[in-house]
Picture (tube, helix red, strand yellow):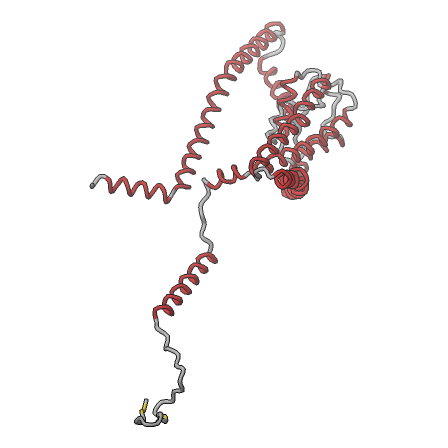
Length: 336
């Protein structure tokens, strides 16, 4: 008997704070997912990094042995300067010196990556003025881009998702939630085909050093706005129509970003995901709701009081206090 009381209290506590418990499980699951990713990345990539370090050390030692007139300090100074220039998008290689990073097409591509928060990092401002302008441009441009994308996605959603789902639901009488799931799946497959698979094939043909996996990897990293910058198209020395190619990539990234947002918004409107999100939300009691509850309680109390208090019975005969009414014939007068 005594043991059942604490257990019942714990059950009631969990039920009353169900969303908090779900949220704690969500935090725990996300933390474990981060750790899982770190373990896998470390176990897969660390051997390749070690092998690359050994190869680079072997090449450096061989170079110093074959060129005894060059000291190790001078070589380090040259490599440090070359790597610093490479971080700013300037390469010392002859086959890469023909490409400029700040012509109009490249600058347009850079502006699109900044506003979409992709940020490959292969090209960065060199001057203090460019860095200052990039800060101001981003502060204004990123919210402007979010507003622009929100307006575009909202209009596209009407024709791509809401009207088709509503039409099928009303036409064939199917469950709206089922129609929404099927429609979202088809839309995701179409988007993956037109903005991942087909562009990956095109990049494989246009980029000499990319295979299909690397091209698909670039499409996903770009449209998900991760933007690692290890693969950037149009940077080859023998790239034909480089300016037009850069502009085309800019248009592809903007259209692909809109398509990704449409797919994500379509999935977010599914009733199943709405119910899943509500599991982790706090239920807020709004002030107007509390006021309505108080008013409802007051009205309920007033109605109960009115029901309990008896009302005076209606009289059908005339009544005047203290007045002698005339009785019928043969009876005594009565004062009421």
